[in-house]
Every structure is written in C-alpha cells, then in structure tokens.
Length: 369
Image 1 (cartoon, rainbow, N blue to C red):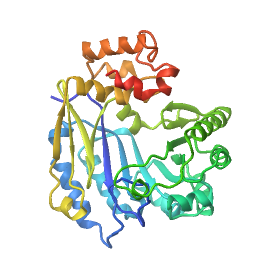
Image 2: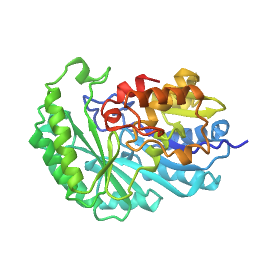
Image 3: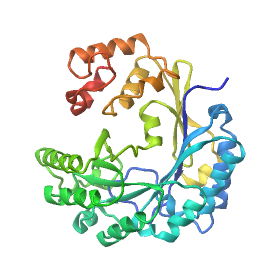
C-alpha cells in the first residue's frame, strides 16, 4: 500500500573548505579527489530504502551540507538520473542546491542547471566584512556582492541565507544587509538568528552578541524594510516576494515525510499513527561501508502531538489544512490541545493558525502540546 504522505529527499554532502565556529552540522574539511565511492553509497542507500519510499514519487530534492557545490556535478547527476530511471521523481519536482559565494559563478551555475538543479540556496550570512570575519566565514563581502550578481543572471529560482544577532553586529549593519538583499531580484530569503549550539567553538568560547533589546530592535527594523519591499513572512525564518516559497521546507512544516541519505542525515517516515525517525552514520568512511538506519525511534501519542505542533506552528498562516487532511488524521487529544491554545489567545478560533501573540511566543504555544 502506498503511503498518502508526501515525500521529500534530503542528500547530505558534508564537505566544507572550513568549519564555521557557530556550525553544529555534520561537516568535514577532508574533501576527496574522487567522489565515486561516495556516489555509489548514496545510490545503494536509495536502493535499500524501498521500505521507506513505498513507491511514492519525491516532490522535492535538497542537496544540503556542508557545501554541496564543492562536489563534482556528476555526483548530483547520478542521483537525479537514478530517480528518473526508477520513476520516483514528480514531473514538477523542485531540486535545490546549497552553495557558497566562492563557488557561485555563472559557469558553475550553468553546469548544475544542465543536470536538473532548478533552485539555488546561497549562504551569504552578511554583506558586512567585519561580521563575516567574526562569523569565521571563508568569503568576503565583495564575493557576496559578486555571487548575487551571478545569481541574478540565471532564470532558475534562488534564495539567500542571512543571519542576525551575530557577534558585534549593530542595528545599522543588520538593516544594511536587508537593504542590499531587497534591491536584488531574488524573491526568497531565509533569515536566521544566530544561536549558540553545543559542540561548537562559539558555545565553548562565546563571542559578544547583541543584547535581547538589540535583537528585538533588529527584528523590528528588518521586518519593516522587508514589508516595505513587498516581502511577506510565511514561516519563522522565511520570507518571500510573490509566491516563491520553498516546496521542500513546506513539506517539513506541513508534516510530510522525508528520506535522508548521506552521512549524518535524518529521516521521518509516517506509519499508521506514529512517526519513525532515524539517522545514518556520521563519518564519511563509515557511511560508505554501512548505509543502514541507526538510532531508530518511534514517535506516538503526546510526543507525536508535540512533533506535529513544532512544525505546523512555524508557519505564520498555519499548515495547509486542505492538503494535510488527505494524509494526516489529527488525534482528538491534539485537537483538544488546540482548543486550550485558543483559550490562551495563542491560536485563532477554530483554525490551526497562530495569533500574532502565538507566533511571537512560539515556545509557549508548543509547550501546550
């Protein structure tokens, strides 16, 4: 029986030129000369995942990392060709590639578009040279500007990442980042607050960060600039102009399924009234030898309610109820918790939509589940 849950594919390519001090992702700076063994392992992983795929067609593919654009395009092409050959890709599939400014030039972009990549996610983080240095980034503000210019030349969809709450970042610097972005023809922005994650350099040696009041001022000012430029916030960290939304991320937030392949990747597959989560081995050499699921966990009952809420209510207008009703049956317990959230003024009446208060105090809303 084919599951009704929509399905996305995440492919983790862990290589970076350097690891940023705030990064807690599974990355390595040991970039191989040849990717053939790794490419074969990814295909083997897909071939062994029929139990999780269940004959569904993927609605999106996301090459994340790391810096996936550092790998030769033949690696990405092998995945896309395998999916096409096995009729596992929707005809309108969104295929996203994360890239950094240093590798973003027209030649590289065209090479990736030729193999089927149709959306590019550019990790800029800031246009300010001082902020970039404090973040430990390996590119300059000039390379950031150049990368934007190169992206503007292509017809594929594109988005950039910016960060706020960075070391020694002022309101003026943060506002300038948004002004520079909003003057481009790029219609999607992922805008993240820097958080100090365990097992990072910044966590063990915390830099000087803006105060809570300064963070609030940055958020307010940058939100005003984006709204004036006709960008709308549709998720906690996502803004778009027009309807240029991320298909891949929307599937996460609407509680669709996703299969992760590659070292350290995560998966969520729904089976009956529970969700199965698992990971893959983190070391590249270990993953090449063994792609079997690890740390498998079954999520159900109250834990499942919390898991669903943590995704649904990141969306400013709530989940796509008409769509999710075709694959997800919400429990009576979940719906009763929604009623409690409505009484607290955190959800709109009779809707799975956060109020402005609920969106501003998301942790308090989710805690009710």
